[in-house]
Length: 351
Image (cartoon, rainbow, N blue to C red; front, top):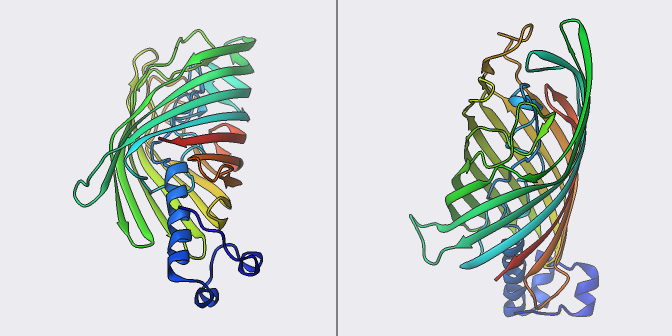
């Protein structure tokens, strides 16, 4: 269903405000609100957490390698807590991550710095179930990451030597599964809960400076909240999780657990166009352990980070369920993690 606002009202305010409601029939206001809500649901079903496919090796830094299954910017999205009508959903993300890390332990050596450039692809497929469970809409999904081009270089120092290492890598990353995600609707407020499981499907070797996998399992207790006013086009979405990591049996390194939050504040100017400010907060909440090299052993080596950026969403075809999303996130401050910029371009389909 679509509705074209009268030219006089459309020029003044594409998303209807309260002082304009008396100038339009009730059915027109309801249609516009439904279109906006439906479009956000179909384009940004991003509750399925996404995998970071970057892993430096041997990775031992504030969770191994200075990275994580969590990659900033890939979870905070438009309509983060919404689930659309029943059916299949497909979303393709292409990301460029340009970053660097400082001094860190690498196996029995110390890395004096690493530069990283990564082109990443993440394909997300989900199915929204018919009916309700515990009064909530339900969805299941999978996220499949693929490293299109990973390039890393750095200088490592050991007992009486220095070694410059560089490498390129492509291949499958660590796949994420979300068996069940539930979303409750309370008017303008939406709440979603659902665990995400990360499986060690990516390539890994301790002899490489960079890997596409992390050689460990992860379990993310994840949730999201969205406030969306379809009349005025205002939106606030927050996605968070507590990520529990298993140990790496190849290195004997135990990564600590992590807390992460992504946020988005958006203005939808019409059912087909919106912009947003975005950001993230990340904090490792338990110490790394296991086989840690001296002099880092016993120091915990917790990572942290905070960043901000911008996002845009558009639905270029009025009669087709296709949405385009762009996002940029800049690391303002990080500790024991990579620091840089990530650029993400996405296309989302609803079937």
